[in-house]
Amino acid sequence: MTLPVFLTNVFYGLALAMNMFVIASGLSLIWGVLRVINFAHGMFYMFGAYIIFTVTKSWGAPFFVGVLAAGAGLAAIALVIERFLLRRLYDKEHLMQLLFTFAVVLLMSDVAKMIWGTDQYSVGYPPALRGAVALGPTILPQYLVFLCVAGPLIAVTLWILVDRTRWGRIVRAATQDREMLAALGVNVPIVYAVVFMIGSALAGIGGALAAPRIAVAPGMDATVIVECFIIVIIGGLGHLWGGFLGALAFGLVVQFGAIFVPNWQDVMPYVLMLAVLLIRPWGLLGRPELSR
Image 1 (cartoon, rainbow, N blue to C red):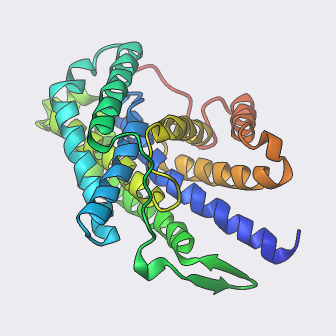
Image 2 (cartoon, rainbow, N blue to C red):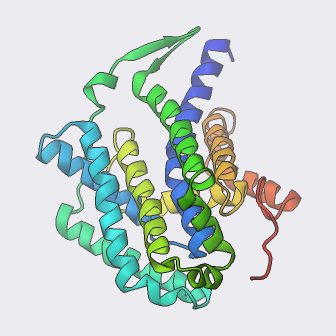
Image 3 (cartoon, rainbow, N blue to C red):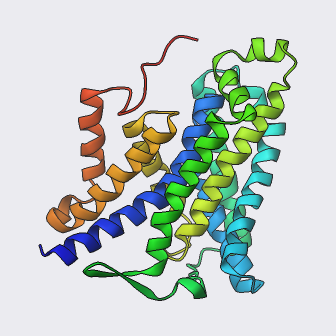
């Protein structure tokens, strides 16, 4: 493999990784704070892709307006789900939460088919990012370079929000002892609702950013939710930078697996996850779960 070919595949793997990180970070955030296994996260991703298709193709809005609309739309949907349904299950066992989120998947899947049908749709690259850019000895699509930059920016933004702000301190406190936090006068239900909205908005934004690279169609959620779970398990459930590291490992393994072991491409992420779990069952940057 020549150096230009190697670098090209590295950047393609990084672009995939950063797109997946945006989606998986929302799943990890929801688990880290709410302790909810959100099986509907992939469906939020699919709705984000459908929303940007509608906004850009049917309404003629700019691409990045569609990205913002996808995030806002999923935040609104998440608020309704959390306020009227999910809030009743926080004290229940994980199996009931998982069954509830799976029911949301079935419901939203039918809603998507009623609104958008079963056809495949495509979303074009934003006009400003339709060209190519030369990076050293290789030439790459500008949109993939944008994804490689957007992922770290979102990661740093989330890190500042969670680790360097008062709201972030409240969120971290809610993960430790929400009863004590409520006794101190903090409205914990609002904190939980905001976290669920942010996590779901990240899924919608991830779906919108993925739309130019893939076909927007029913069933696209089924694959991505499995991939997101692989990423957060590799990195450590609830750990932001663990999810970032897990996404990097996932993207590069998928990209180079398609080259070196094409018949095993789909299996390689599972092999990576198994290897990590054998060495560190709580993930690369995760910590052993303590009884709460």
